[in-house]
Structure formats: structure tokens, C-alpha cells
Amino acid sequence: MTQYIDLANGILWNHVLIYVLVLGGVWFSYRLKLIQFRHFTHMFQLMRNSNNSDKSGISSFQALMTSLAARVGTGNLAGVAIAISLGGPGAIFWMWVIALLGMVTGFSESLLGQLYKVRDANGEYRGGPAYYIKMGLNKPWLAVLFSICLFVGYGFVFSSVQANTMADALNNVYQIEPMISGTVIVLLALPIVMGGVRTIARVSSILVPLMGVTYLLIALVICLINIERIPSIFLLIFNSAFGLQEAGSGAVGAAIINGIKRGLYSNEAGSGSVPHAAACATPNPHHPAVQGYVQMLGVFIDTIVVCSATAFMILLALGPETTELTGIRLTQFAMTEHVGSWGNHFVTIAICFFCFTSIIANYVYAENNLHYFKLDNNVGRWGFTAIFLSFTFWGTVAALPDVWALADLSLGLMTLINVGVILVLTPTIVAVTKDYNQQRKKQADIVFIEGKNCKIQGQLEKGIWQNKG
Image 1 (cartoon, rainbow, N blue to C red):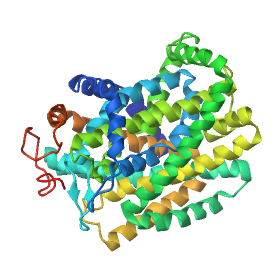
Image 2: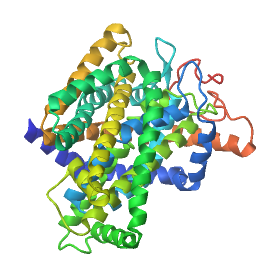
Image 3: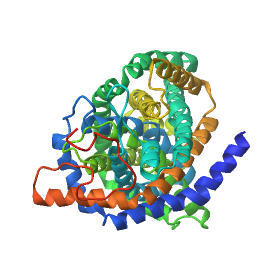
Image 4: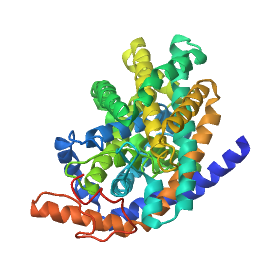
């Protein structure tokens, strides 16, 4: 099984997804006229009124924090270290590239998630790729295929990856047995995930900013202390990215592959995961494009800000040297080199918080599709929760390479389907974005109303967009 998974990953990541993601990002940058750069400040402006919501949805801010809870985790601390170990410092440059292109891809998929959202049995918003595949393209078989990949990825495997990293970090520093870590993780997660989307969103809105700001402040202090070395680190990254320091092109290929792979795993742009959080929101103003802008900001924060912070701490500790350490242990080593032994404890605490919030946010993504299969009832939720937490526990005692390989395969298949779908739905994305910006220029009350000002593909849920929700 491991051989087949490795073979599939080699084909997907080395020969398919790199081109799909880059060309997809270039395509949407062209069709939306570099919206990620032209409207960069508008992303932040929308956050001023992002705490408002209604009984059907969570707020835009809570949706952003939920998506960041899933994004900011293993990929930002352990994933960056893996990218540097396997691809060299140049992998960081390619993480930046995929993030800048991924911002507009993330905008597009989140806009669609919001546009094609539905109300579940409790009257709350749900949505995601399965919904815009079925409602926008009228291809239910493809929606089912995506949902299966989603359940395998976010329902089972990705929580295992996060739990694996937590257990490894705790075992490395405190010699806590993985089975003990797994039991505690499950017991802490159970009441939160059973509280539903709103409870998870509230927890994420507290923990993500708290740990995120603390982590970034420490990284900033380390960079300021080593300010004279920062230019040389930038030079190291760029030289390594284009093979100016290595012999042959193999190092460049490794940098590109690992940078894009770990960058996508971290920011998730194009994978079809974030639209599930976007669909749960009631944005202010109530227009699908608003949540697109908000989630575009999430890609920027995750990769350009948080991943870069980790990368600079590692490269400032290592310089041009290499090490056999990888994953979270390399990040722990780097922090310890900078601030002493307490840095090891801080990284351990940070990764535990980040990974835990990722686990509960992953639950939201997979739980969203229960409605699609008409399983959004007590039996369906309890059954899914039991399987989800079982895989979370399994992750704490599983072998790291096997878990990461299965995670890469699940993410790759989801991304391949989702990017293909949003490319086909490009006319709708362009039309809805144009409608929003035309209303914005008129300085009128912005609201999206079905059938007014723009033509969309497929059918929308009745009663969602006839009024302000």
C-alpha cells in the first residue's frame, strides 16, 4: 500500500499539481486582473465590520479564524522545516510564489462556497465544493467523489497528521507517551466538536489570535536581534531557489516541489477545504465576494507571514549548514538556539495549540458534507465524530512518513478536482466579483441578489440571496 501511495504522490505532485496550481493561479490572476495586488488593502478594510452575523451563520471573522485554525498548524511549524530539509532554503521562495498565486485561487473558491451555500436541518449555512459542483455544474457524481476525498483527508487523515506532530513534540521534550497524548487530545476535542460549528468558531477566535500573535512577536524579536543577517538570509533563499549555489538542476527541482507541496498543505489554497468555512459565514455586506476577500487574507497571513517567520528562525539558526533534524524537532532546535532552553518549551506549547485548533477546524470541513449525504442528524454526527476521533488517536502512535504520505495523496486528489471545477466556473466568479466592485464604486448598500446584475452558472438555494439573509 505504501508503494502505491508513493507512486500516486509522485505522479500527482511531481508531474500534475505543480502545473495545475501555478497555471490556475495565473489564470485567475489574469481573469480577475491581479485582484490580490490591486485590492490588497481592501482585504483589511473588510475586517472592520467582520464580527457581525445572524442566526444562520457565523461572522466573517469567525470564518477566517476557523480557516486559519485549520491552516496554521503542522504546515507552518513542522511543514516549513520539512520543506527546508528536503528542498533547501530555496523551497521558501516557492512557498511565497504559490501563496501569491494561491491568494486569488483562494478568493475564487471561497466566493463559490459562499455563493452556492445552503441551509441545513438546523437552518444554519453549509457549503463547499460538493455543493458548487452539484448546483453549479450539475455533476452529482463528481460532487460525491470530492466528498469521499474530503472525508478521507479532513475527516480522517489530516487530524492524524496534527495529532502525530503534537505527540512527537511532547515526547521529544517531556517524554510523554504518545498513547497518553492521544487520549488527552480526544478528551479535550470531544466536547468542542460536539458543540458544532459555532462552538468551534468561538474557540478558534480566541486561541488562534492569542497563539498566532505571540508566535509572531517572538519571531520578530529574533529577526530584530539578527537584523544584520537578514539580507544574507534573503540572498540564501533566492540563490537556492534558482540553483545558483548548487551543482545541477536537481536541487532546484527539489526546492520547487517541496516548496509548492508544503506551501499548499499549509495555506490550502485551491484544495477546496476553506470554502467549507467560507460557506458558514454571513458576511457584512452580505455578498459572496466579501468572503472571497476575507479568505484571500487568510492565505497571506498563513504563508507570507507565519510560514516566513518559522523559515527565518530556522535559517538564522542553521545558516548554510545542514542537519539531520527535520519536522517539528528542527523548529524546536532553531528556537532553542535563539532563546535558550525555554524556546523548546514554547514551540512545544505553540504546536500543541496550533495543531489542536487545526484538528477541530478539520472537523468543521468534513462535518459540512454530512448534510450533502443527509447525515446531519444525531446518528450521523455521533458516528462521524467517533470515527474522526479514532483516527486522531491513531495518528499519535502511527509512523510519521506513512501519515504524511496519505495526507499528501488526499490533498492532491481534492486539489485536482477542485481546481478543475473552479476553472469551469470562472464566468460565475468573474461576474460576481464584477457585481461587487460595481456596487462598491457606486458607494451604495452592497448586497447580492440572485438574478440581478450578473448571470451565474447553475442554480442557487432558494431563499438565500433574495434578501440579506
